[in-house]
Length: 113
Ligand code: 5GP
Ligand code: ZN
Image 1 (cartoon, helix red, strand yellow):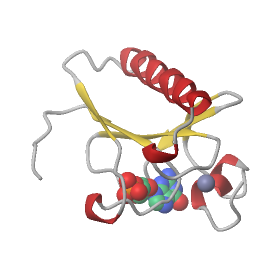
Image 2 (cartoon, helix red, strand yellow):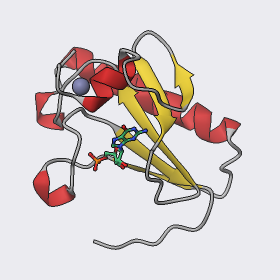
Image 3 (cartoon, protein in one colour):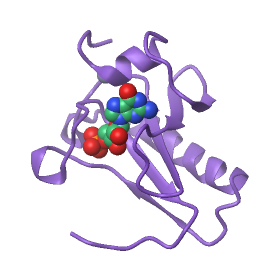
């Protein structure tokens, strides 16, 4: 837990979130400012910021997170497809320094830089 991290606070239950899925290592909840009809944040509970900080243990955790995203997308009926995005650092617009995957879907998605 990183004291100043908003996602660590959500994981700890100190800030409310609209939770879609939770287990001991992963939390999935709705983005507070959705940019698509469905916009979920898929958060490994362990605090780290960047893919460059991934250890073998974290790689396995990220693998399970992606597997879970596939299941959730199926449960949500996203048969026409969806997008998974990981913003890394300033140029990508990463605003929360806790690695997370955006799940976007529920409508056709544009693609811009
Ligand atoms: P990033 O820009 O770091 O890739 O994504 C951070 C995301 O977290 C943004 O889409 C933003 O809307 C979302 N977010 C920021 N603060 C909160 C919050 O307190 N609750 C929820 N549910 N989402 C948040
Ligand atoms: Zn954190």
